[in-house]
Amino acid sequence: MAPIQSFESLLKSQLEGSGLDLSGNDLIRQFEQMAAAEIAGMPMPQGGLQKALGTGPGVWVNGTVGGTMTGDVSPLALQNMDNQMTSVLFTKQFLKFFRKLPRKPSTNLVYEWTRRLGYGGGRRAPGFVEGGVPFGGTSRYERDNATIRFHGELCGVTHPLMRASELGGLALNAVQEENKNGTLRLLQQLETIAYFGDSTILSKDGIPVNYDGILKQVQNSSFAGSQIKDMKGMPVLPEHLEDAARQLYETAYIPDISSLETLCSPSIITDFSKLRFGIDRRPVESGPYSATRTGIPYEGHQSNFGFIKMEPHIFFQRVIQDKPIVAGANGFVGADPQAPATPVTVTATAGANTASNLPGSVQQYYTVSSFNDAGESLPALAVANVTPTAGQQVTVAITDVSGATGYRIYRGTKSDGSDALWIADVPTTATTTNYIDINQKYPGSGTMVMWQNDDETVVIPQFLPMMRWPIAVTTTTIQWFLLLYHTLVVKAPERFIIFTNVGSLG
Image (tube, rainbow, N blue to C red; front, side, top):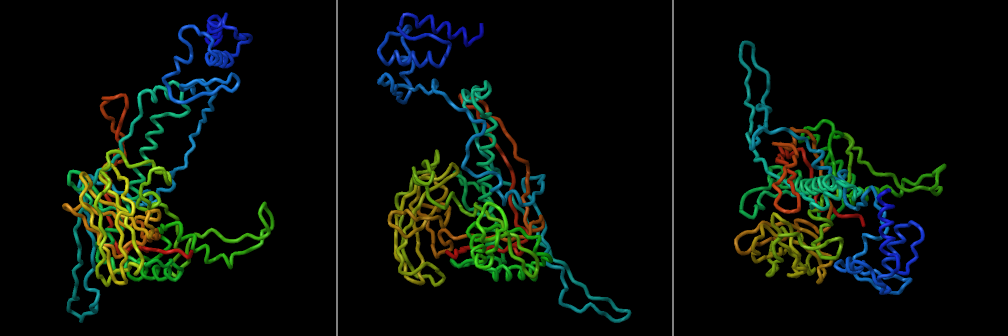
């Protein structure tokens, strides 16, 4: 006898005498009737269904009988097990920086390279008299190095979930899915620090574990004044791209600008499309659309020195949406596990600084959270405020939070902190950490990075490729590490142009 038929026969034999209709062999109907009988108060052998389900959460109301059964009866409900999980998160196609940057094997934990600073003798005349000797020059070189950093992600699945997956009770492979999820979690972080990385933010033990990203390495170079274009809230226009192409051609010796990579905030590409709306109206001869179609997808700018191809990039935001964590809002659940506590004492004071671009006579509200290796705390929303005048800076002072390695600062103009957006990450210093705000980062502004993408310009020295490292099993959660050992080196900062604080056309 088939197992299902045997179970049905057993069920029918136990229910005889209960007054239930046992005609047919529909197992689902037998369960429904058994539940209805229990709700109606009919005696059930062996303790009854309600007792068996009484420990679970949830409520089941049977409309026919009118009774209510407490307990989790979801195992008895008809379920549709999709073979494809629905996801509204980013995919690997959004990870562009880390995917594009060239890699080079590093056989040691310290990566060394040599940079040529000049050929020497470029200003002399090469001619010399018969029988004489030509003058010569000496090429100049610079030796530099960078330390490999260790990056990883802890993954795990519970033993019951893994067994359910192996036995076919899930429509997905739990271990495979967690490997994919962990990889995307790790790559998302690496994608962000490729641009925003800051080596001054230490581990909880006070040890350097981070490398400087592209922005900081260019800022710390002698080319910062020429290669970083602060738009101060203004949009990037075609003339800015033309000037950038000429600069790279003349001073960075890039013969064909078409070889460049260019990533930018989505708002920048949207603005370029808006500039073309008036000239791109054209008839559509056939198809399901109206007789006129506006706009053409914007791919880039044709300069006199080559085509500048532009791609949108969503990870020019330091954190998701550049917003602080607000539990229950914008998809946020709460503070990261093991994150430090929320800052308690934060003050904001205005003072003179002629280099400041802060808008005068506008009240600024500062929202501050703390973070460490494990993650970010809930924020102190609009915890400090001040109204600077033109030509003033604001000093944000944060009293130390135990276990914090740094503080994340957001700024807005609303007293409830609802419009607060990220402006800075600041490493912890002593008992009070001060951040000087002169509008280095306009909240919500865009970014564009143009660079020559070869290993003479920028490279990721990789000590080991991504690997899966198992952990000894000590609980019913089976865990493992995903590890990737590497660093990032900008060898030729003059071959980068970075537009910061890019505003929008509106």
